[in-house]
Length: 532
Image 1: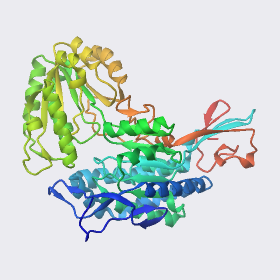
Image 2 (image 1 turned 120 degrees about the vertical axis):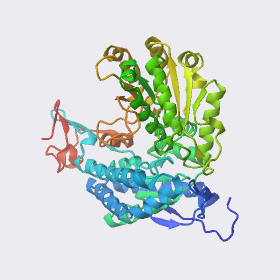
Image 3 (image 1 turned 180 degrees about the vertical axis):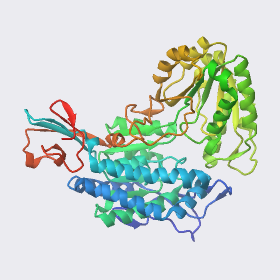
């Protein structure tokens, strides 16, 4: 708890008003670049704040069911415009609290993606194909997707904008589906959440949405977080973050029959087939290094295991990768918690027998600051991994990866089969076609384990387009069908299906009436999809 009597606690946003929190504790954010605690004091709310936010969200959800889709769409567009007008402040706050580079990462990549997501969500909301309207005119049976009700968003630290509690894909999808949002800010970037929530609050009033459409709590105890996701007033929860917290929230929500979508990271295997390494092993080593060390490897899609055949080309690839890793230097991580978790994971891997090839692993000194880590390259053999998969298949979130030396292609295939659910899996093949026969065995193997299969590229970086799948088999995410990225289908995570049986035209939602609504969405009418 903060003990400085002169420190001013930051407010929370509940039911359309900024007000003092009913705090049971407090925290301060950390500047990982400067290695210093920041001045602002942030509240850890007690249950009375959560209870008030839930009651307000229920009221807002009821009002939103009676509003046209244009209201939510107009909010998303107006909110994006307000955020764009404060670009410099938002990017500066995100940099100060995350250590992520202003250029190109935040200013030229993440903020534009964030604004694009909000605008894509607005377009999907207006057009309404996401509602999957289905009509049987002979029997007058019709159905569509509608919002679930209040949505709680738990964001990660590594994408303060594109996955932010008040800015990210979960937020945009929930609003577009007609739901109010209660955002629980990440403690690593609270000022970003406060700054953006002020703009959201203003946009809510400008377009006339209910005051509690967007609410913000800065901190909760773990027990109250689990109680929140299990509360019957919650329609759904979206969580992105670490596996330990994600599994606890998933268990709490599931036990109460509540909907929860979790994305908890993954080892993201990369398979380098022999022909590809013989053809361009040095270039692939450079791509791997860039993927693992970009933004200090703090991506849920970072390669965690790299499988290759240990022939002459494989050995040359390892030599090139070690040289490339050693040339990067110490990198700034998001904060002390992330640094400690990465070093703990590296320590567990080394204790299990993984050998250090580059960097200095769990024993890294704080060169350049207290939140820095050298890029770390470890290795194991396929036989070692198969003998002890529970200890050697470990997500080390940050600028580290594990090379898996395989004695043959057959051994590589056996080893890859031990990888669990992943968000993405990459396969590198020779451009000459030399690896096409191997693909017949490897392709189905990785597709069974990953939500996204990538050819001749590393898994980091994904396009925000409708066919994108950012989710995967447990434990990378759950449930595994829907994606956290890709409008309009990502909206369906925060919706349920309602059937209208024999209901008169005038009493139906507009999208289910015989004439097509203004957006002319695709609808399934009498056995076929049509915009008519």
